Image (cartoon, rainbow, N blue to C red; front, side):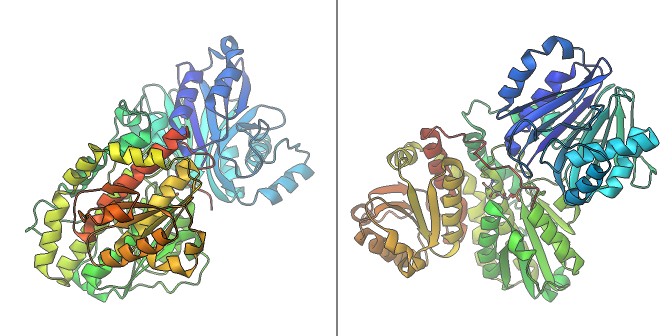
Length: 614
Ligand code: AGP
């Protein structure tokens, strides 16, 4: 996912742009660039690879651009055109007077490109974005006003975009607009910022305006003007952002991922505070706008998500069906949007997304909303596009998650699903209150159980070191921890690039067992409970094929020492709550293996923190 930043004010703009892009690195990128206004010209600098390469490129121009106070910047995650300097943003029109940076996809760029080429525009790049530069320049030639030119462009382009545009004939000015992609305006003293996400300017101001789809904002050092798509002035609300810059520091940890893994006990405490005070009080979840009658009318729940959020959704299915007796379907967003679904007004549709901007999930939610379903969104970003579609919004409040690998947001999503299921069960009176209260009591001590794991990491680290050179990894589990196996495998896959796969243990003998030999580690997520014995026998089957056996278990059974080559023991917990605890060692195993292998843990290759393109 790309990231854009813009600044207009009275400070030197170059470092503001570079530092802002640095804070957006977590979104994933393969090239970067800035455009600054100086001596009545727009100067553009771009580089492939990490931001240091751009800094290197700028170093020989430092003096000439040191006085610039207006500019735009971009980090690019390639969608159209390979990562190279020509395709890097900013893009300019042929005369070089106009520059644009863009996050999103212009879906009708091909026909616009043909039209513009026929009018004499010469394209340099393979990108969709360059169309915006030429089209806006053509419009500018007609109206001689940058804001109006951008408004004309916005009416002609289709798809998703957050744009920041500048023109040398209108110095000290940026014009920004968006549709289906985030764009936030930072409000300073005699200065304004525009960016894809808050971290880009949070160290300068925590006053912000969330631009809405199709609005056009004109930023100058002395004034901010916002208009809707028809040119009607908008008085926007300036919000005080809840974040402090400390959220963007590693606080002494080597990587954001390790910091965020260690934040998980407090994340659970923060979510439970105010919602689950003690086990014999009902759960307080006023954010859920479903009363007893509407809950009783529900004939199905459809949960839609991607990646780690999909694994949280799969665990949500087990929990809701167990306590609420409502059938729950879970589906990857990318599959849901291309299937003829039977969602209707008696279906509760739950969208799960850390970023709240994942394109596939956003599209699916809009489809379900159009069919009359009640939309409940579970997200870490209450300021996101998905949150704005919600009839009920469950913000998980895990704090900004910088590492591409989702950890604390996953734990926060799981905790939210437990609260939601128990809340609905209490309203529906669908489950015996004694068991509900027992589970609530156990939830209150989950943070301490996770802390026990986090203070005893040596054995987990030894396990990671022992298996860090393996090429393939199989995770097996049964029941509510089957999604845990998928999530543990995804963590290892996405940050160490090892081919890790999660399977329901009962499926091993239907094919995967053919792969087993002494080069293949098999990790069993062996939790006390209804499927313990079954999983133990699956593990024995794998052992009989000479697989290297690892147990992640809360069992104290000594017999395990004979069967397993390595055992990671965790504190005991009720089976229904075990996914919240069992994932912690798997996050740490993935982290330590990736660290041992010297991988870019927080920004794995090819990945973005939020995939805002389909
Ligand atoms: C998880 O570690 C990955 N970063 C990825 O699978 C992620 O969960 C997925 O892209 C969904 O993102 P979202 O939760 O922001 O919608």
